[in-house]
Image 1 (cartoon, rainbow, N blue to C red):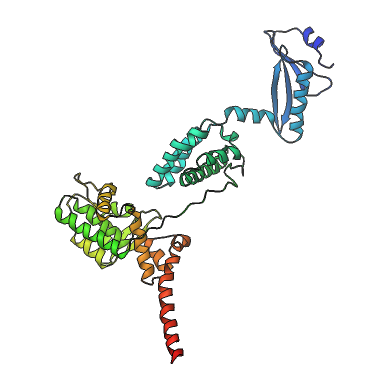
Image 2 (cartoon, one colour; image 1 turned 90 degrees about the vertical axis):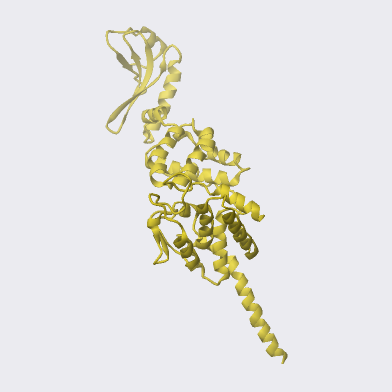
Amino acid sequence: MSKLTKRVIEATEPGSKEVCIWDGALPGFGLRVMPSGRKSYVVQYRAGRRSRRITLGPTSIITPDQARTRAIAILSEVRAGKDPAADRYAGRTAVLVVELAQRFDDQHIAIRIKESTAREYRRNLRRFILPAIGRMKVTEVTRADIAKFHHDLRHIPYQANRCLEIVSKMFNLAEVWGLRADGSNPRRHLQKYPEKKRERYLSPAELKRVGEVLREVEAEGRELASAVLAIRLLIYTGCRLSEITKLKWEYVDLEGSALHLPDSKTGAKTVHIGRPAVDLLEGAPVIVGNPWVITGKMEGGRLTDLQPFWQRVRARAGLHDVRIHDLRHTFASTAVGAGQSLPMIGALLGHTQVQTTARYAHLASAPVKGAAEVISGLLERVMSI
């Protein structure tokens, strides 16, 4: 076999079948001639037990020397243990991020994520993540791409960080599903923006004002009694909003002073409640055919949105910056002020992580300072005698 040259290529005539003429100087490099007369350069090699062939281009466009250079580069990759043909195929068939997101939804969000969190995942995907990287191939997304995406959301740092978490999980699963190489998650080493935790607790005076407003609206009779009940239960139990609005009578154990919740943000749990909460539940109406404690206007339904009612209550109480979730913080801060330990508060609130309860640790300094004041005062008086 002689070296493939322009003269050899031009002299080769097509036959009734496809034929390949191999270069004598570079094994694996050759000329493919089709019955139609179309001629192209190819390179052939073995990857394990499989024979691979890559078309380098038609003879009418690239020269023999250009094709030879490409063939040498490909064969060098083969000697390095790579499979260029498989890589090319993977590149052509690689799924887009928008397709990965759909699989992420079907096989992870819909199955493993709580309903409220799932809605937030989907909203972030739809509004932020997919518009930025949705049309990119999963294999082509780099750390620089994700860094830029995160940087572009720097004006909304909380949202930027939540999106970063979703991207991280989605690309971790891409590795599990074989869509990216192991350890290639493009979110790696990217730092989140600092987030200032919002800590708002109602003072005794503010709590008193909320109580007055609740009694006023109750007496007026223009608001749902179940909405008033919900706010009081949130204050007396420290429960999350969804744990009260989705509370069924079958979960209520009045004799045991407990709520046995089959599902919550942290899974199944028992919430131990005090006498004020028990009294509220004992006095609440049980409607035949309606399983919910916090009933709605629709027959057999529950109150699904407490926010409008709370906004009216807080406006009337002059507490425009207080969120419903701040009632839970108030429960915790009151427990700290009463001398309860952080592990006990964590148990009351249903925390699964110690660091979640630790955010209230600084509040414990108030009773300690008070004790220090009393003790030092006694010592001072003794020394002054």
